[in-house]
Image 1 (tube, rainbow, N blue to C red):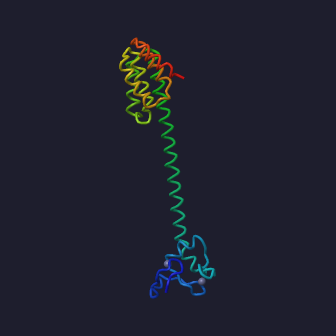
Image 2 (cartoon, helix red, strand yellow):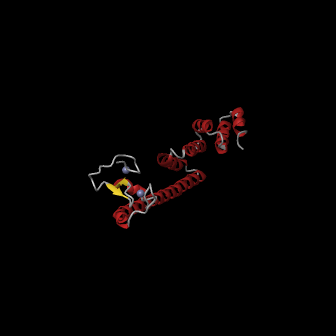
Length: 190
Ligand SMILES: [Zn+2]
Ligand SMILES: [Zn+2]
């Protein structure tokens, strides 16, 4: 005797394994679990299963529903936590970046470099180009033009579309008297 749902054999002696519809079409008790989420009728003759058969599965469906609800609550919570964490990161990045600009403005380049180091250690992977630019700019501002060129040239080689990097690259070349290279860099500030 074969199950109408999975087409595997049914152990006829095991009455817990087998469920019949009112017209005696057999299925596995286990296979009915999935079938009942589509339909409460026999897969062959479409006759409704009697209430006492369906009731046996109510606890199973209740548990299944609770599990699904818990799973979706958990996913929603995780998603909310991710959003909050990413907003907190954005705020922190903005704050550190503002501090760096302020230090640049006040010509406290040492302080700026400390903050750039902090930004690099925490967000260096995500903000690779930004931190390279800031290192280049800081070195330009403290008169280390060779180092500024190192950082900025490496940056524009990877990220061509970075006008500020070309601007400070041009300034650094100019400070070293490398007029041709400065001109090349300035031409790329758009
Ligand atoms: Zn089956
Ligand atoms: Zn049937």
